[in-house]
Length: 224
Image (cartoon, rainbow, N blue to C red; front, top):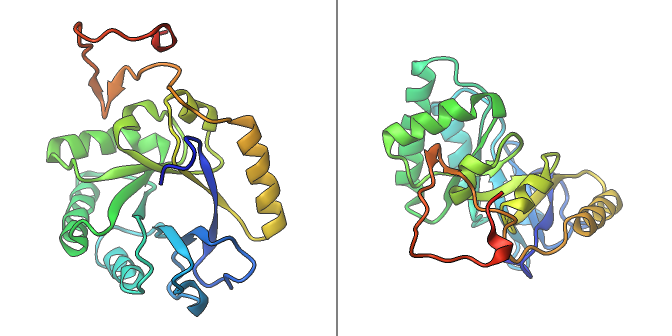
């Protein structure tokens, strides 16, 4: 996943699209079916993004269908648009538990959480000790997610990610190759390579970061 220490921009495409015009490295939105061209040794599908729907059996079936197609993604991205009550929270936890049992570490689960429910989701995961679940950043404050922030989707404030040292894949929703390449080039110029974060985060998953007095950091690590 590390690519010359900078954010790498990948097209985020429908699973039903013809892959022929696109780069070898992509991320897919699962649309219930798969164009046969995607299952090819020369192609790398780094993440599969499920579409928003109620937690439980429908989303589990969609996840199972996506995973069984032989794409071998690094991440399965699960959208969390709302968490209206405790029942929804329990449904999310139950679904995550079943998915973790199914994937057995072969695919990592990353939640793409709507900023308005981020605090509630972090509390839920912390109380359930769900350390095996990470995050796909799609907006809001990335700092509380920093130690389990595995991927991102464009449209978010990438400057905030860069300040925290994020240097993994950023998926850009795309429908036309030339427009994607132009936007990827623009973003790469605006967010050059990151070697060190501008500052260390104050929290990790909602918990305060406790500094170690035995560790001395250089001037470029000065907390702001």
